[in-house]
Image (tube, rainbow, N blue to C red; front, side, top):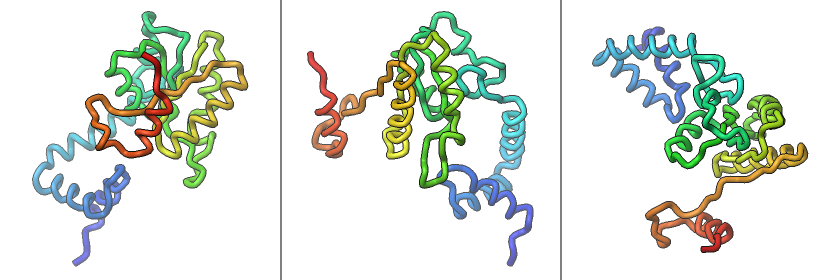
Length: 198
C-alpha cells in the first residue's frame, strides 16, 4: 500500500524538526490526523502566524515582533556588556537566572566547517558591528561547550580582541548539587582549572 502524497508531504515536513526521524515523523502525522485534527490546524496556523509576524531584532538579532526587542529597549540594562549566545533559547535560559543585566547578541547558529557553516551563515558581521558601537566594553561569549561552540568562541574572541574589546567566556564546571563521583572527567578537570579563591 502506498502512502497518500498529502500524508507523505506532512511526514516529510515534520522531519525538519530536530531529533525527528522518519518513524517519529510518521507517528506524529498519524496522531495529528487521527486524534487531534483541531490541534493540527492550530499548529499550522501558529507556524504560519509566527513566520509572518516574527523578524530579527535590529540590535541583538533575536526574534521579535517589533523592530527592536524588549530587552534592547530596556533602559535599566547595562550597555557596557554584550553576551553572545548561539540561539534565542540560550538567551532565555540566561535571562531565567536573573544574574545578568547587560545586553545580548544572538548568532542564530555556530561555526561548523564540517557542516559547511561559516561566518557568512551566522550573524558574524552584525555582531562585529554591534560590538564596535562605542558603548560595549566587554563581550561575554556564552556559546555552548561543544566542539562547534568552542571553535566559535575561539574565533570570535580572536576577532573581537583584535578590535580592542575585552572578551570573556562563561565558566564551566560542576552543576549545583552535583556529586563528584557522577561527574565526567573532562568536566571535573575543567572545574579544577577554572577554580577561584574563596
